[in-house]
Length: 249
Image 1 (tube, one colour):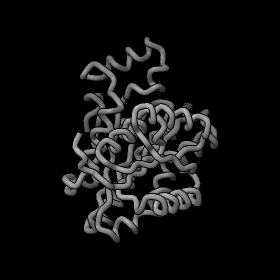
Image 2 (cartoon, one colour):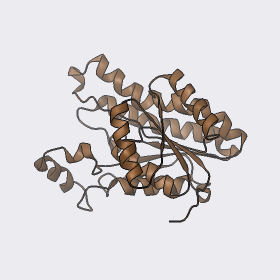
Image 3 (cartoon, rainbow, N blue to C red):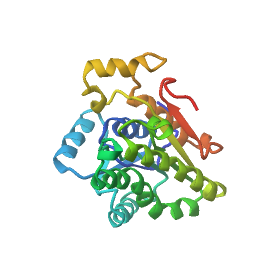
């Protein structure tokens, strides 16, 4: 694989999940020095060991992206250890599903803070640095459900839709400084979470996807690498769907 991103510093939030892992590996293969945050030490150590067994040395720093001061400290640590962040992938996310009339404030707040507030918390401390050195790639991982909504996910759909609103606004502010901001909206991807759903339910989901299958995490990672490249400098403010044709805008 070509090393088109050789020497770039990439931060992938939520990098230990299914899509996040594929993104971390893809960017590492492209030559990036990749960092991800984590909260659970035991889980992350197993993830580090698995990555190392495949030849990947991905740095991990403990930080909760729903807390602004922890994100400031995260960015400061990355800059100290590796240099300024060139590529940011806002990938961290969680779900707390419930119909709205039964949804608690805790369920609402947990999803908004992790999925949407985190985008501010992580991007704010590094945006000036990207602008100052004339290069930056910010890629926000949203969802098909941020585009079309989803029963029982008013919190998640609101957060994911908000991510693209953020993308479009910030893209206009930083465009002349060599910084691009884009959204990727995956559909149903064959992650551990989706594969844990009963086969009957999965088959019903697949029946709604024109290509007739779930997506692969690596297919999302491929688009991340494309958007992170020098050649993608004219793509900004976009929302790129990766959903097998399930929802077309």
